[in-house]
Length: 312
Length: 250
Image (cartoon, rainbow over all chains, first blue to last red; front, side):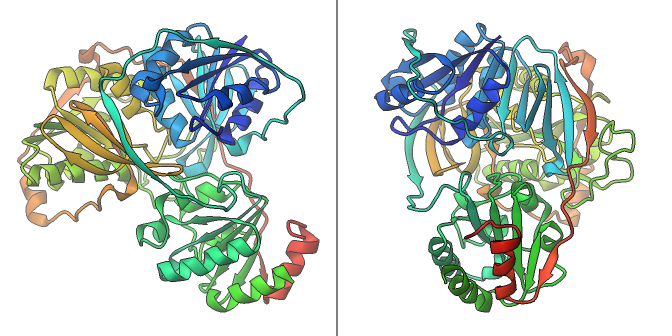
């Protein structure tokens, strides 16, 4: 069985999600190759070559792939995809953007957000915002899947592994789309999807200024920061903070929901967290049904107290 | 320019999800059905483009059973000009949906296709990207802002790290994210006006797209339930439990 992983990186650093995909790949018990498209991404290539169990790193290192746009990256994946039984990426905005396009070019159905691999043909994935789990068989010749990172642990690095590095030479130009710019949130905090503790704020914070207070609290305990859709829509927090069905899916050891009512679509993004704490002034808020521990009260009084207790 | 919008009829976002006792799927009988919220945003965006004089005609398409006509009427009441229902009682997989939309695109020649980034029932997030791939058109997924010009569209996308802006050549496929716009309320006169607009019904067999899928759902189950929430009275008590009972903090 031959498996291809599509790696996600920014030409300099690999995303932590890749290592969850590597764990999923190992469950197929086959030969694993990794595909990298990028430009001046030597650091990334060298690092992938050390991933345990990887046979080959297949690299398209060219100016045309600097921003890894789907219009010319998906055809390249499709070109080499025929050689594989399984093609995997993780369900980040990168994987969700690129893999369905490659699947269509391979005339192959795809499964999104797989959380469990039962056998080589059978997979479990959440539907209806995680309110139901579907067990699906896939009889396609090539199994194309995005995996949800919370369903698979991060792969452990082993020492002294060195995969072969092969360069793909048929570079495809992109005449359809061009990169203009991006605005990335720069933060010293742990990454939301891989943090051990996540503190999330909702509409109960009431303003962007108050949301800053929550960020300060998160920093004091070394937590990542998230937000509900309501808080993002209200402009308290940027879009990349959003946890939920259509935002980021997180499963930290500790999730602290502050001033979040607990809409279904928010719960979809965090209900697999190990321990969930809800702080809300409304004792009937649905978030309490999803939480392990609930504290009813004024969050503006509770937060400073919690900060003192936790740092004490 | 002509704009094509694809919409899906789904269980309403606020409805309680009931799993059938035999595990064969989610019970949709007597459950409130609505237009997929992301598709509503797609229609709204198309209508705004028409109001700005950029779009000349908006065609709305749905694939599904005859009840989808109700969803298409909603789109017509929001401001779409005419509708097409590709009628089928079979559950259609994303790749098949993309192939059906490819056939309709060839027939209608739109310059822009807008649809929701994902349907809130199957949560696949695939069709727009697949359609763009099959047509060899550029794709602007998870869009939070669009600027449409005669030969291109500049799209701001919501990505994991923040926002990304791309310039796409037309024709192009756009999939909508939550913050692209806020769909309008439909006024009574528009509901009445929508009744006079046409819905063309095409039996799926007429499109010559094979609808069998290699994907088969074996069973649908409920996720594991969490134990009931323990309400604590004080911050001290909470921290005590986190430290000693579940030991997630030190």
